[in-house]
Image (cartoon, rainbow, N blue to C red):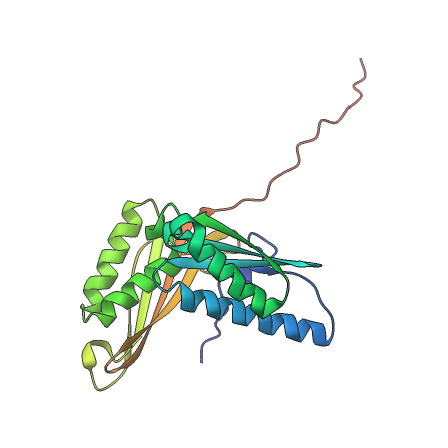
Length: 222
């Protein structure tokens, strides 16, 4: 058995931050954790075609702020903000607090690991060859400026009787380097032969620690 560490959790507090930022104790922690799960499930169910990559949840005494990172903000906002108002009302019913929704656009969806995984999974559900879908995603990501990408698919590929795993990569993908800006995404394709898992790692360079350059008054003897 291999030892596997989540690429995001591996880099927390070094170059990455938590997707949910709040503090609670005792039973309140469990209740708010279940609320977070319900919020993420609701947004995923209400916006399946909006290209939602990431959700950030922050809690204040009487307010919950939800930031939606999406490749199609027009679908999230809706005509004259109708979709946002409806979604805000459903989230208010779950939390019982005022909801502040913010929508941030993903300018380069081809270099977002979650969106790439969803794209590959969608092609597999449309019965496109897994190798063709993987090669196309890798080519588009490298064309958009990614320094490296790795894609793994596992399951009954092509309807075979025995499940297997296949992987393709291009460029550098240093998964064990903490300072590497590694984006990770996972999606599942629901096919007639069963589920096929898709994992994507995209390397966008290194994030080096900032050095505090302070001017020191040093006495020099003449």
